[in-house]
Every structure is written in C-alpha cells, then in structure tokens.
Length: 398
View (cartoon, rainbow, N blue to C red):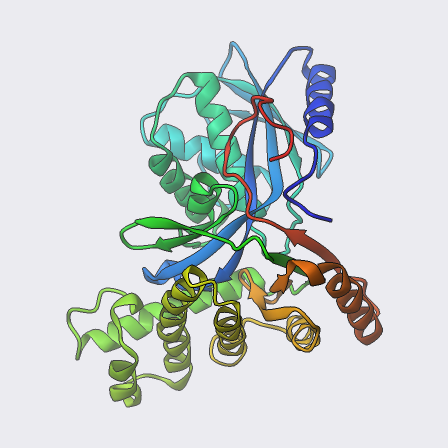
C-alpha cells in the first residue's frame, strides 16, 4: 500500500454522508497527517533537532456550527459520542479519548479565542498506538475545525503551540513540539528539518528513487506513556547537574559530547546514558540532513542504524519486536537503513528502501517477522505527504 497516493474522495464522501445522517446538516472537512520520524528521536523536548515526514494517513474532522455552547462529537474509531459544554472543560486527564477534544477546546479558549458550539465527526486513518502520531494529527485537525467554524483567526504556529499545551495539561503526556509542528507545516515530497528551540525549519526533498517504508510491529507495551515522562525527567536532571559546571547550558541541545564525557562522573549512570543518546542524536540529525541533501542514501542509512542502537542501549525505549524488525530489514536488498520511530516500546520502524525494491522488501519482511513472532506486521510504503488543512476537493491524490 502506498499511503500517500490514495484516492481521498471515497473517504470524504462517506464522512460527509455519516455527518449528514447523525446531525442532519452539511459539514466542512478538515484533516491533519500522521508522521514518521526519519531521525532525531527524543530530541524535540530537549530543544534539539528532528527530521520528521508526514505520511498519507490522516485524521479527518467533519464539523458544523451549533447555535449553543455545546460540542457534540462522534468518534468513528471508538463508535462513541460525547457531549461537552464549552463552559465546563477544566479538570485533570480522564484517560479517555475525549481528553483530546476537551484539551484542545479548553486551551484555545484559555488563550482568548472564544469558540462556538459545534457538531463533529472524527474519522482516523493513523493507526493508534503505533508511534505515528495519531494524537497530534487529531489535535491539529480538531483545532483547525473548531477555529474555522467559530471565525477565529490565529497563526498556524500559535495553533501548534496550543495543541502541544493541550496534550501536556489535559492528556498528561509531556510531548515535544515536533508532531504538532510537522502535522501543520509539512509539504508533499519533503521531509522537514526542525530546530525545536528556534522553530526554524527547512524542507528536505526525498529523492524520487527512495521510499519510506513503515513496518508496524503490531505490538504496544503498556508502560510506554509513563516511561516517556520518566525519560524526559532524566534529561532534565542531567541538565541541572551539568549546569553546575556549564552554566550556559539551558537544555541538552547545548551540550557537546566532549563536555558530557568530561563531567560523566557527576551524573548517575542512567542519566548519563539518557544524555548521551540525546547529544549524539542531535549530531546524527545534522549529519543526516547533509547526507540527504547530497543524495547519499548509504550515509543516511548508516546514521539510522546508529540511531536505533542508541535508542536501544542508551535510551532504552526499544523492545524485542522493534529490534527484530531492524535486524530482519538490514540484509534485504535495497535497504539503506532502518530504525524504530516514535516514542518506543512497540509501534513501528521506518526503513529507507530503494523504490525498485519495495515490493520485495514488503514480502520478505512480512514473512520473516511472521515466522519469528507469529504476528503479521502491517507494512506501508510511504511518500512524504501534505500537511494539515481544509479539504477543498482540489485534488483527490494528496
């Protein structure tokens, strides 16, 4: 399956019909993509560098304005409808999908943007729990929908920051800004090199002879969310300890590997290894950008393998299924590199594969993983997709 060249009209038509059936009116349609991260894992919340790419799996939101201050939201994924009052959105995370709806609406209003009531239907294509950023795609699509029907004008960057805040405060995940930013600013055919401190970015075209192939391990270990927050805490501890000797350091982005090694004895071993991953990963991202601009797939792929090893050994966010997928991919002809993508503890790997070898790769990796685990992986051949926006019907191939 090539996830970025699917005809979208059937999805839009079905969503429109479903909305009409549930709410008896026409709707505007908004969408935002999921993502893979080519390299730069767990660097975004350390003010570092990342290189994600949007993929052609979207969260779709159909919306129409209501005359009152109520949100009625139907999720097709969960086959459940919720009702929220825009006057009563506060409260801690409830561990329910409605936290995303409540959080986005609340943070928009807290920022001074008065929303109107709305009916909404949500359709998700991004696999849940696969590390492909289904949460950020929902947040961004929802924010676009709610602001549009309320006549609220805000910059795309403000929207990104408010969606990140919603996930921090209403969902309870202290995510970096990469996923929301990529969902909003990505452009078809390009990866995106993002400086997570300055939020400066540049587009990096993916050579036409390469494909990004996503392998879903179909495994998601339950400790992922809590462990993610613990990794972030370890990084913050490392910064505080290093600041005693390096007062100019504000985040791990400011630390060079020689400084980290010089003060290694000042850090607990676990904290040192967490810091070492982030510091070396930032170096790999910058090298990978240079390799991509030089169309050097071999160098880029080697950096992907190095990244996975660091995530496995220093950051300890991989798992046996992800390690197996990387090991199975490496000897297949036409594969330049492979690594886990996303927060870890399950989910997906991303593989850089020659366009001529994708069918063979899909067949081999599926058979080998099934033989080893008894699980059939989902394998998607992707090309960088377009970012978030309102569906206008101008093209049915993006």
